[in-house]
Image (cartoon, rainbow, N blue to C red; front, top):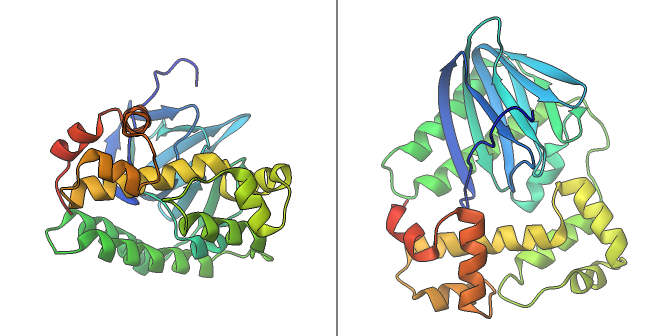
Length: 270
């Protein structure tokens, strides 16, 4: 992985999709992963997902899921020189996390074999819906993705997927208080855990740190406000839980690569 330059990526949206048909030479490397989940379904050819100590070869019918923070190293499988895939980066609803416990290949790289043409068509429809011109297309596509993930869950043979209810409670607590000052101690107290125990469980189950999750959700909220309202930047910052407009702008630019104002100018409404 060290031979490749880091692949660019930025998204504060809760859903971003694509349909690629790539040839030899296509490869994405993100050594620290990204802050959202990535679902990839191979529809033709062969792809490869590299990980420490090996690689997963994906063919038509293979679905791959990567947790936040999972290193990315994927591309066209060298001997075939073609890979067609549908993909979605997304920020899941809290209740989705129970459905995202797939068989693990390595670390946060997970895999299911699902030979179901109907489910594959549903996933392709998510991308078509998000790329279309329909009003409320992002909300509609997000709900359609929920149905796809439920469909995948039906093929998941793993048992005891419910996870730790205290992590779910922590996620709900955070979501309800994004505009407030939030420390990990506050979240831990609310769910009856020590800060260190919560940090361990939260990272294990979601792939994120508590503070990283809080910031990612706040940035997602800020991005939605920048796209859909004419609020001044100071008001957007306050609505997303930042007391300082300057600090908000710094963090937003670091995560997104552009200032809040530039993001607003570049991004069309959905």
